[in-house]
Length: 396
View 1: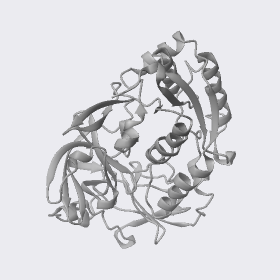
View 2 (view 1 turned 180 degrees about the horizontal axis):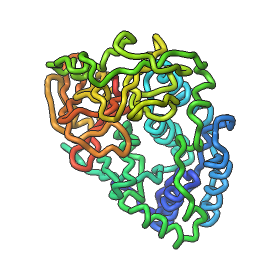
View 3 (view 1 turned 135 degrees about the vertical axis):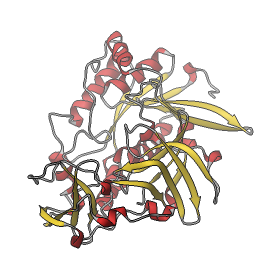
View 4 (view 1 turned 90 degrees about the horizontal axis):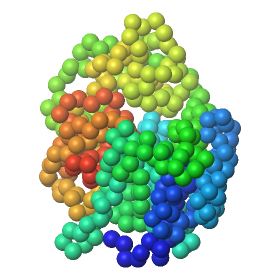
C-alpha cells in the first residue's frame, strides 16, 4: 500500500555488515528507492565478546564498504545506552528470576522497529528495511489496512519467530526485500553486485553486537553462587500423577531435593535454563543429563537422564493476559473462546498443532503431544497457515 513511487520514497536499511542486509540495500537501490544505510552500534563492552567471531568494528567496516559499493549514504548510530536499558538490564532481571529471555525478539521490538525506526523517520524515511527472511502482505479488513507477517520462503532461514512481537504500526513501516528468496539466491545476488559480504558467514551473535560469551556476560551482574545439582529419576512416582485440567497441565513439575539424588554442584542456578545439556560438567551417567528445572530462590538445579525424561515434557503452557501480543489484532481471541493454530516455542522448531484457550486467568496453549523443555521467559508464537498471528511470553 505505497502511495509514492520508489524514486520518491526513502528507505533506511539496517546494515549489519552481513550479506542479508547488504542484498536488502542492493535490491531496494535496484528498484529505484532512495536508500540510506545505518549501522547500529549496540554494544560497547568488548570484554565479553569473542573478537574473532563477530567484532562490531569489523561489521561496521563491512557495512560501510557495501554502502560505498552501492553509492548510498551511510551512518553509524550509537544505540548502546538504549540497548543496555531495554535489552541487557531486562535480560539480567529475567535470568535472576530463573527465566530465559530471548534477546533477538526483544531487540526487534524495542530497538530495530522502535528506536531505530524513530531515528529513520527523523532522517526523512518513509520505511525501514531489514534483511529478515520474512514477507509482508498488506490488505484491508472491513475498510481498515491490515499488514500480514508471513514466513520466509526459505524454510531453513524463516525468521518470522524473531518478529513475533511487532505491531501493526511497526509492520506498516517495514520492508523485507529478501523474504521471498533462498539463502543461496541471496549470496548469488551479492556476488553479482560485487558486494564484499557475499561469502561472509552468518553471525550467531546477539542482535547487532557480535557473539557474546553468555556466562561472562551474565557474570557482569549475577555473581557466582555455589549450589547443588539434584538428579530426578525418570521413574519418580510424582511424574505420573494425573493432571486433569489446563491449569494442572501447564504447571511445571514442583521439583524438590527430597525427590532426587545429589549429583554435584553448580556456580549459580541463574546461569542455567530448562532443557540445557551442555555446561553441567557432571559425568558418569549412562545417558546425557538435561536440566529439568531451575529454582533461583533456593539456588538448586534439577537434572534428568536422556532427552526422553518425563520431567522434560508438558502438554500445555500458560501466558499471562498482559503478556499476550496479537500481530493480527483483528483476530484476537475473546475471553472464554478457543481456537486451533500451529505454534512453536523456540526458533527453528517445526510448527506443531496447538489449541489456544482464553480463560479468565490467562491464555493456555494446549499441544496435541507433550512439548519438550517449555521454558519460562521464552516466546510462544502461533500461526494460521504461513501467517504469524500472535505471540506471548511463557509464564510457565
